[in-house]
Image 1 (tube, rainbow, N blue to C red):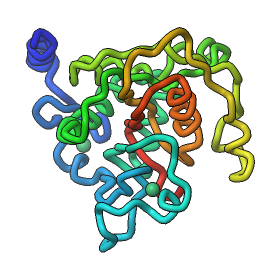
Image 2: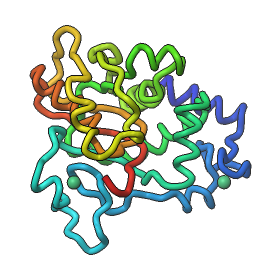
Image 3: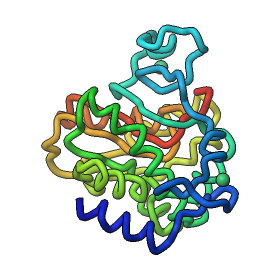
Image 4: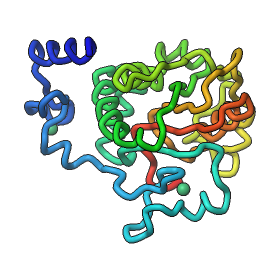
Length: 238
Ligand SMILES: [Zn+2]
Ligand SMILES: [Zn+2]
């Protein structure tokens, strides 16, 4: 409530500008209507891993890969596909400290996630942790930048320190497909006792899903029963 009042006041003092083209933003969003229409929405995702399914595939059925090898997380929700201009927005947040991009991406996530909460409301949000070395060189964790306002907006507490990244894995994009899973294995550790039965992991982009899968596996070993994944975007092919 207070958060919404502050937000409304900010909007009146600083009218929204589209972060992509500079035109006047839509009501309460730093994006104009034209750019919003052009966003690559993930319209027909696999309910388990959010991989875009071919149009015409039954919406309730998981993709072939999930049916063959169900991932350790239970649901994955990503409103958008990692295609232009998402690379610009996510890259700006991740590598250039553009926190305003993070605010816009969070609002797009919140808008998509709110109706999805009918499938169950997580008790806790866990941002995917960065290794301390990478956190020091970047100065912030982009997943935490998304998780904070998202938690506030949805009224769900966040636990940024409940999981630790104990191995500094090479970035996923540089890995060959076969190497990705072994590279991430054992990368996370739960610190202390986790009370929640249903947790949502927050990350910027889901690429192969290997990182969130390993974190979900770690949380389940620590007693969590259900793990959902919330990310801004999904790469169109795993
Ligand atoms: Zn625009
Ligand atoms: Zn799937």
